[in-house]
Amino acid sequence: MTNKGGETLKRNGIGFILMTVLIVGLICSPLDSAKSAAAKTPEKTGEWIGAWSASQTAAWETVDWDGGTSRKGFVNQTIRMVIHPHASGSAVRIRLSNQFGTKPITFGKVTVGLTKQGAEAVPGSVKPLTFAGKQSVTIPQGEEVFSDPVPFEVQDGSDLTVSLYIHGESGPATWHNTSNSTTYISNQGDFAADSNDSGFTESFDAWFWLSGVDVKKNNKKKSRVIVALGDSITDGYLSSLNENRRWTDVLNDRLDSEIKNQTFSVLNQGISGNRILSDSPIFGEKALARLDRDVFSQTGVTDLILLEGINDIGHEPHVHDSSRIIEGIKEIAAKAHERGIKIYAGTLTPFKGYDEGVYYTEKGEQTRQEVNAWIRSSIMLDGFIDFDRALADPNDHEKLRKEYDSGDALHPNDLGLKVMAESIDLTIFEKPLNGKPSTGH
Image: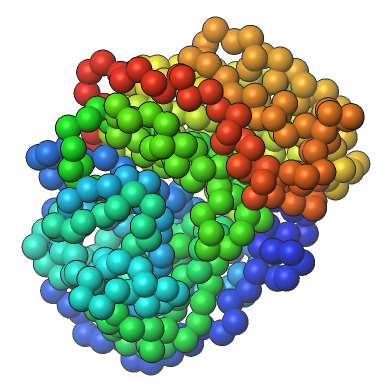
């Protein structure tokens, strides 16, 4: 979900901007690179599971909320991203996406390391990643690649630093535009192997091209990989920067702490502003269109938690026919069940007071109530999570409870996101599932 007038990119009233990214210099001669065909399908020996993910969208062409950064891209620069894995393992591989690029992109060097602080990695921890045995990789337009597996101890909840050196001009970026995690951008040059932060001069609140991280499990427990498909409430918009306070982070910690008979990983596939029924050049492909890429391709996926629909109601063109939103949820549920994936839907949370008369209307509220009534009673779902009741003001059920409100009457604050995670009855995940989880491919 998003705030009007571009407030998706604002945090506490401060514009979400890139201070200055220097995009200058000569384009080097082509490197020897591995084509994506050699790296599309990861090695399947051992049990691999998704440990982290981020849904990708196209560069912003119709708005300039990011100062044009995603549209302009980068030239001979290094992008350093910090991510928070939700599973442990003895080896790691990453997934890079050029899904929405306009031309092939070449990464001259890619590394992974343990995060020290900010743009600094723990000295001695940075390791190069290869693609079909080669240091560089060129990803064709519309495709993605997996790196080769590399031995690397990943700890659930301990941050990783992933660095991409872009060789030449990237063109418009494939990106995740609301990371709630600081990404660091260098001047010209390859700083991917550096553990220090001296080469990184700018920062940005987004992830670029990095769509997933898998780990090779180091135990024999059955796995449960839960994908959360959602909008800005799942994305953690307005949660504390760099503190991993999304409801999915809290849920993952609860599962690890309270259920010991399985290995859990909760993957966040929220996109701020996203809808079930309509695509947007700003808020990404609709949930129905991105299911294969963002849910079913995730390594080891077993469960889906769906929390979408409020933007279908609030954004133009408004959907005030609840049956259309319900049919969309039904279609998602059917496709999940075809693949043996369990699906739980979250009730749509209160939004009275947010952009009243435009985003929030009485007609829209009635639609929300009708969708929620269906979710609570549907036999097509494996269960539901009542986020609505968890967050609602006891004196006015159409509004967020004040203590849980970030200040815009729509997005929960850190406490509200924590309450969402704590409202989930973990007994639905207590019993290990029979059979093997999806490989995602």
